[in-house]
Amino acid sequence: MKRYGPAYLIPLTTAAGLLLGGLWSWLTVALVFALVPLADRLRGTDPANPDPPAPSHSPRHDLLLYGILPVQFAVIALFLHRWDTADSALVQAGWILSTGLVCGGSGIVVAHELLHRRSKVDYWLGKLLLLPALYMHFAIEHVRGHHPRVATDEDPASATLGQSIYHFLPRSIAGQWRSAIRLEADRLRRRGKTPFSADNELWTAVALQGCWLWAIHAAFGVVTLGAALAVAAVAVGMLEIVNYVEHYGLRRARTAEGRYEPVRPCHSWNSDHATSRRLLFELPRHSDHHRNAGRAFQTLRSTADAPQLPAGYPSMILLTLLPPLWFRVMNPRVAAARVA
Image (cartoon, rainbow, N blue to C red; front, side):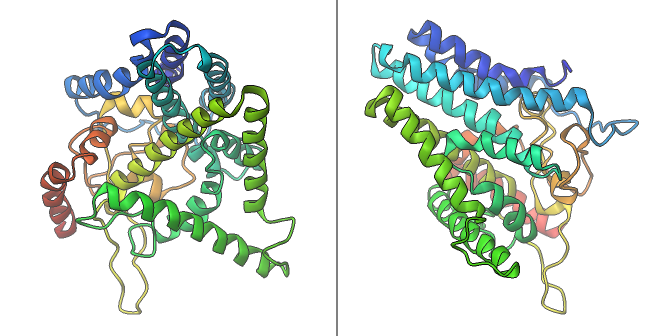
């Protein structure tokens, strides 16, 4: 249990920042983008795999995942309650970024894990975690769109070589919305229903998100609603930047029959940096996740054929914001990965 306890540092430091105000409002930002990169640098990588392999799912690991749901909503409730007490734009910015990191770095990470499970309860818990980010369509597109099409030009969430994060973000966000609409319409047509059926999962998600925003406006007013929208934007930004990092420049080849080759570890970037792995429930072991999408997070493995990122996720997120430096670091690695 203590191995993944650090994952709760993001919501805990955010709650502390919301209560204390002042420069403490930036505590989570400092944790994620300064302390964790430093720890990754000092501790280095840990390529060791579970030996013997851990069971597919275990109650104690599941409890850690489920605990993020009430913790996330408790932090958001605190954010909404405290918003009017912020005494400066600096504090407001710190609170928005920190709460956005709770939704993006804790909520969406756990949602991603739960959405791949066969249990309908887990699936819906995953969707609820996406609610504050206003990104519930991710449940449709990620599982049914991104995974089959990963590392191809048909996948909006797979960045192409030479594409900057600033070009990728609008393309990925808009493309995933279009993909979710098509995927759900195709699913309903196969069942003899129209896309406007009440069984359309996408419209249910939009309705729930509308109710969420209405409830915030009714309880806290339009200004706080704007702050909640800013939190959602930060969470979505974090998700999409991670998408950019995870598959940048990697592409699946076509077979003689014109089909794409099967997904292999070489089609996703992997990171074995120990601290950020624990903070993010092993999400950085992304190569094995795409090869075994149903594998529980604590059982994900590092393989020799997976291309490795030069740093942990928080450091790589910061690097994306400077495209010339990103290209200088990553483009040679993409070329080497393609040759391998």
